[in-house]
Length: 385
Image (cartoon, rainbow, N blue to C red; front, side, top):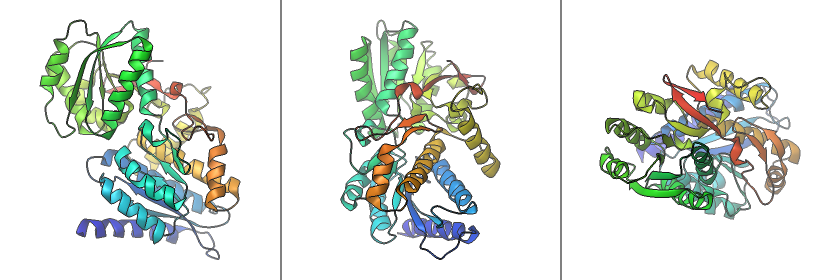
């Protein structure tokens, strides 16, 4: 209870603090954007940059006159990665805070716990979590910013196939993201003619996975290994991989796409590949790249404000906020049905994560080739292609 009250206080202070800095006239009620993120707990590396990004751009928006001539307030709660808390906070956002739109859900579990409440309330929701199940099948009021786990699997398997690697070992966490990633990887591999010759799992709280990796290493014919998970688990897998002296090409999913992972994994990450957004290699993509301006602009704004590196996950919050602003402008009001329809009609929005083309049949709007393949060299992310 103390933690919940503390979280509520943090959210209230954030909203009031932003409001006090705003030069926007108070004649009309503010536009209230609700948020629930995992700012503390095991998924804090996702939620912390997401919240900082929302706070940064809400402040900038208000400094520039607000939205539709109205102040924008961010009402935030920290779910600490707990799905039941996420559902409770979303109920509060809808019934007590009367928010006009919600951006949040750092994890798939938190997002899916909130979806039934949001669908019943009929308020636009932009999720920042990755699993395919969030937007497939399409849910009327739910949109999501990251590429799906299926697209990540397809991007990794495509890179493997281009390298002539067609017999692989798969290891994945048993949490929501890892389990979903395992399922879609098995399906995509079969469709692409790639054989998964070893298939191991681990609990996200495990502190050692050498037994699973040893079984993969001892499997005849395995040519490469993919780990699908997020959080501390992938760093442990990476360190155990090196400790066992496995020299096969090693891949991770986009669930580890941040400098925080590099710090956790250290030298063990050398040579590792993964699918990620252009944001992690913003300084090296050419000026002619359509995303160059937006990724370099966001990177500079974030790092100047917080004196810390950007991450893929903050980029999801940036795209979610910008799409929300565009939809409200296009709707000309905060009428939830009009904003939802506007979101669904957005085409060609070039964001940090990729170019979004949303529609009634696609509430994520990214293609799998928006992923770049990155490799760790000298402790840094580098662009493979």
